[in-house]
Image 1 (cartoon, helix red, strand yellow):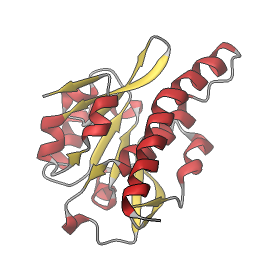
Image 2: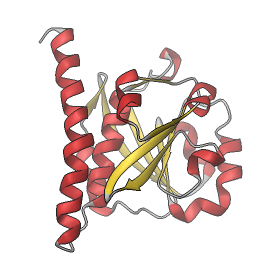
Image 3: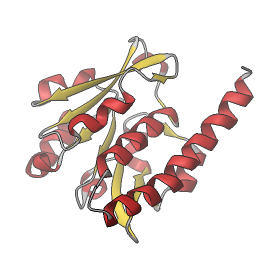
Length: 183
């Protein structure tokens, strides 16, 4: 499949998950079956597809999506395990301490780590790691992407200066879909 066609299909998939996913979540929320973290797992996968890492940090055959702290995803994160991201396969890692964050490409910081954010972001200083969280104030503390609930839909906000400090480039298509962008 030609490269331009893959990009078009990728943009279509990202748009579908960003707009259909939250609607799906709302429908399930009303029936008391909250697939919130399935939607967030799909977002994590698409974030990985629309963020560029420096070439020096993409040498591993695996694209590591890590969860730091208590795992809110449960089995929901398995939907992206082994999926391809830029010629690499997603590998899910649950980590409990900062010693293992260096092996992560994308790090979801669990709500259980809120009191440790300053230390986490200090340990991440100048590492090419996409940080994502859903706790209030995550991007203000230095995170790159924060999930937010807006009109009963899961959305996200982006902290561009934090992404630049991490050496990451976020696609303009992803920025267009963001609820907000901190510049």
